[in-house]
Image (cartoon, rainbow, N blue to C red; front, side, top):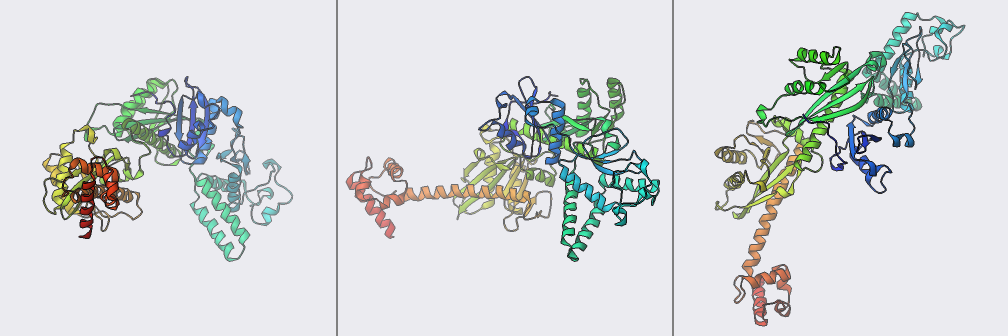
Length: 616
């Protein structure tokens, strides 16, 4: 197991997702914490002209990916409070974010906004990225639940008369004893359940009110309901960076979340640390192991069982709980080990729902980004890996993403100058230095299947040739069932029957595999279908271009072939000078004679010959 990975700013390998980033100096001290909707473009902006004033001091850039911009903002807030970076203190106000407070510590609770959190028995919901969103959510709650919004303390009840909210049926009137304390608290518990995320039913009711207001031509009221729905959309974004409810006990917990992901031959583990309800750091590790065949690679359970004792054997601060995605058979033994090291019980838990499951998903997302980043660094792949690659992995049931796809096609006219093409896509994108072309040598006449077999056989013969690159994860044949069967025959003869072969037919754009009798049809706008079409079309384009160049070369040499006194070297000089046979035809005898080695008499013979060929 390697240690935490960080490197000088490698801007080519940053993800294009929301998140927070930490810029560190050579000693590892945090200089600046920032947030971004797009990490790659935002971090690059610090080093472009004019650079940020701390750019020259930055030696490392680390990041934590987030689900959305709101979470990224809250994550930045937590990291700034933890690290107190010098440039953040000077550049921005360290503000506190708004919460909705439900005062369950008093007899008749009420709800309002606050930026101060106290241990007074109240429930806190949030935080929210901005006050406007929080106010709209609070307004939505008030529209639905008739709780009191007055500022009177419960001990001042009962009052002589209620406020207008009671008259308008927007409050059940606890101030005048119209409802018992127990019934009122049950109502407030419903408010709490709504704010904890049980919003589907409430959303339907608001939509019904909006529709009714619109039908009654009460457009201003309908607009209000529209704004409330928009606020609910804001609330529905999973804010897992901070706890949604202090009453749930998250605020007092120190928790670790283990996220695991593989990308090709790279395995990454992320430890997301949540302290007192806030995500404060993310550590990532790459795991090493002996080379193994895909079927012998350790599973997720084995990797966790190897990682946990190695990692927690050297930490100084232990969490109260560790969350991971897979249940472990050796859980009891590992918990005994952790308890001995920590001095208290540390359960290993696989959450199935709720905010902890969402936080675990965030750790897994960060692990996937780290694994992909390391794979691209190791294998020299520029740019992000197309998500369609993972879709192809799931479709074909592969053990790892098919990061190298080779596409093949044949081009010929009546069997003349037949050629085969090989194109390579790495990470879902063209890898043009891997393209290869083949002149068909062993097939006479028109036989596409035989030509395809020859092309593939010659590729297999070069399997160990470094100039051809690594062996493909998937081979894509341009054609349907027949072309695929011809290809499979070659691979089977060569002892490479484990190679994954697929065909893509032009007519219906159907995917053929060796394992399925029926072709696979993907939606027209499916990213996977579009990626496979790009591979197929690129192979066709490359083969056609090579075929045309061969025919053109053959044609221009054949036209000049029968001219007396014009040998191979003089033909090459003419073509280099004029660029094409057409340009020679357009030139005058004097211009042709100006080429070194071409006499006036020979220039006349060339001109007359080309006129005669054109007349024919």
